[in-house]
Image 1 (cartoon, rainbow, N blue to C red):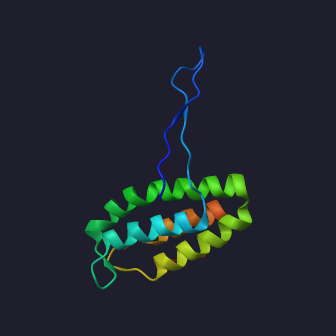
Image 2 (image 1 turned 180 degrees about the horizontal axis):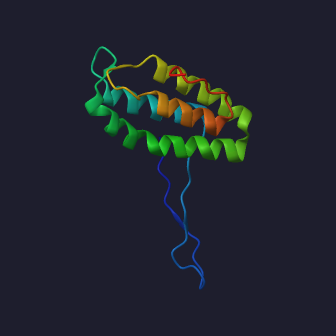
Length: 120
């Protein structure tokens, strides 16, 4: 993944404004998401409840990129990426009571995918 230097966009009214390039391609988002999942799972694909908070921290920037994708490239593109992310979460085994349902609900909300809770 490429690194871009932030561009200074400050002016007299807002001297703290910078611009940072963000890759919102499907491949970049899914790669970062899979890294977050893999780093928090054991070699069998199991994520312990102890690692869920770590995953939440690692996945936050990915969710922000998904929001940017939906806003700037259209909800339809984000919906395709979001569906793959949801499948990756569903394939993750865990002993946590609320994971991955909270994450799936969030992704569905961003992408406009109908969310049906398994707890209803």
